[in-house]
Length: 117
Ligand code: DGP
Image (cartoon, rainbow, N blue to C red):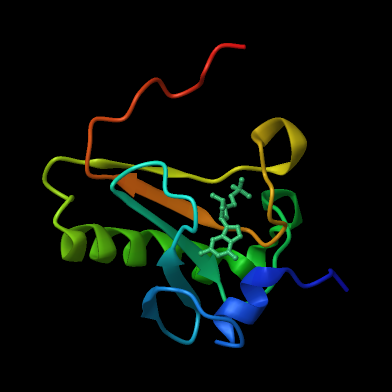
C-alpha cells in the first residue's frame, strides 16, 4: 500500500486549500507555489503514486483529468489563449509529491518546454 501524501488530506478537506473543482473521481486545487497566473493541480482522489504505477483500471479516472482540465481552463478564462498540462514522474521528472497529479498552467505565454541544464 502506497504511503499517503499531503494531497490525500487536501482531497478529504482535512487541511485547507483553494479547491476549484471536486467530484467523485478527482480534486483540483491551486498550487501553493504558482509558476504562472493560473496554476492548478488536478489530482485523482485515489492514491496513485506515480505514472509508473498506473494500471488499465485507472484509465477512466486519468482520462477524466483531461476533461476536468479543459473545463477549469474555460472557467479560468485561459482556454482561448492556451495553456500547458504537465505530469512529472519521479526524480528526473522533478516529481516532489508522490500522488500523481496534473499541473494546469496558463495566463501568460509559457517558456521552453524543458529548461536546459
Ligand atoms: P511536482 O513537482 O509535480 O510533484 O509538483 C508538486 C506541486 O505541489 C508543487 O508545484 C507544489 C505543490 N504543493 C506541494 N504541497 C502543497 C500543498 O500543501 N498545497 C498546495 N496547494 N500545493 C502544494
